[in-house]
Figure: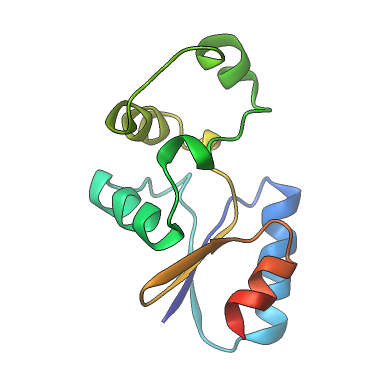
Length: 114
């Protein structure tokens, strides 16, 4: 089952969702701002993405620029920061079985599906 972690307020996330809807009949929509990820879910996603927590941080967000920029955190601290501030998570994330991809740009989703 394919899942898309989506924030409907984000233009790029909406573009990724639309792209997925045009290519896949059955998938699960996860609005992670309404239904926050658990620590285990985020850790699993990171393994499937093959990325460290800091690599999925949206560094253009005001919260990051004011509170986190230039500071050093270990992976566990980044995970806790992302769980407390899910707006910082890059989006959309498309996941299935043993792999996941950040769907910005949407071409990443096409490569992922093929």
